[in-house]
Structure formats: C-alpha cells, structure tokens
Length: 275
Image 1 (cartoon, rainbow, N blue to C red):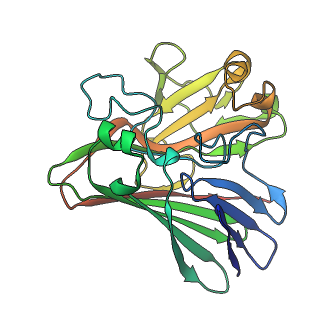
Image 2 (image 1 turned 30 degrees about the horizontal axis):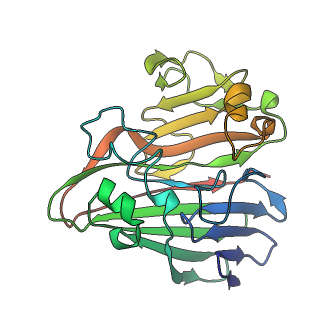
C-alpha cells in the first residue's frame, strides 16, 4: 500500500482504490475517498498555503475549543480553536504497513509552534497524530504528552467535516434524551427530545458523553452547520457551501482534561463508510 510523500502533504492509497491526504500544516486530513468517492468536505475557498487554518477535512483542535469563556483560563489568550491547527507538524513516517492498512504519523512539540502562540500558551508538550487507512475505514488518533514541570489543562477535538449532497436531507441519530449546550442560544443547556437532529438553521451544539462514532477516550460530540448568515460571514467558506457539509466532531470539550507532568493522554475516532 503506497504512501506518497510530497512537499506539503502525504497521500495514502490502498490497493482497492481508497485514499487519504494529510497536510503537514495542522496535520489536517483534507481528503478521504472510498474507492474514488470523496467523504470529507473541504471548502473551495479554504487556504492551503499555511496562512490560515484549513476549512474542512479533519482539523485538530488543541489545547482550546473555540475561545475560552473564562478569561482566567490558561488558554484564554489563544486564538479560536487553539494552536495545533495553525502549526506545521513534522513527518514521522510510516508506522504500520501490511496487506490491509497503512498508518502514517505526524508530530508537533512546543518549539515548533509559532513564537507568538508559544507566548500565549507557554507549555511544553508533544503531540503525535496517527492516520490509518483501510479501504472503507479511516482511523485518526492523537496522543498528548505533558513535557512541562507542572500540570496543564486542555481541550481536544477532531473537527470532522463530512461531505453531504443536500443538508436538508441529512439527520444525525442517536442523541435523543442527551443534554447539550446550545452555543447558538447563548450556551443554554437543553435536553434533546427528538429522535434525530435535522438542519433548518444554524446549528452548534455540544453533546456531553455521546457516542456517535466508534471512538477512544473522546466523550463529547459537537454537531455544527453554519447555515446561511454565518456562511456569508466566513471568508474561507463559500456562501452556499453550508448545503454540502455537516460537522460531527468527537472531542473532550465540555470540560478540560488535566494532564500531570510527564503523563500522556490518548484519544481518537474510527469512521467506517457504510456502502
């Protein structure tokens, strides 16, 4: 199963025609194709030159989700969604290669983060991001090690954008009777009584302890679609692209993870395309 290493990204290909692409910038998965069929959404206006976080695919959110609501939080000075998605990871090579799957790894430590972000969050850490392709399955796994002398707090999320043909015909199931934080309605907490989530307006919800996908150590889910007005306000997102995407994002964002010095945390997701 070949792995093509290019100047700005790595391409994984399997023997049955499936593929994945991962940029060094943000270690962002920008494409996952099942035998030629694209399953991830990437905005046609997204910048891929490292000047701004990639709009689409699977950006890595670390160590802060959105902007910290508490000004005293350690991560309060960081930009929207933290620093990993706007830092260049190093290529750590192929970690697994057999007849059925291939895994590639990318690494980031605090010294590789842009200097202004190091000042905003002066913690010593190491991230390892592993992407595994196996025909109809994509696995993404992140490990975080605290290499500082004191504990630090962090959020983590795999901001997965799925490509859909028509958002009006999409629903997300399995969330009935689970409480969620509604970011559109000033962060109020609501219990979802519907059998499925349908999309008729801007949707931005954090579901605690929800299991939508096969996941490892990621207890929360974010469901997001910007809808009409917010789409128009994003320079790296076409006005009508909200119709072709939905984000269902596994993470640990309702609370911070506290990681002690020299300890590690690991989490990930396994997505299988049903065909």
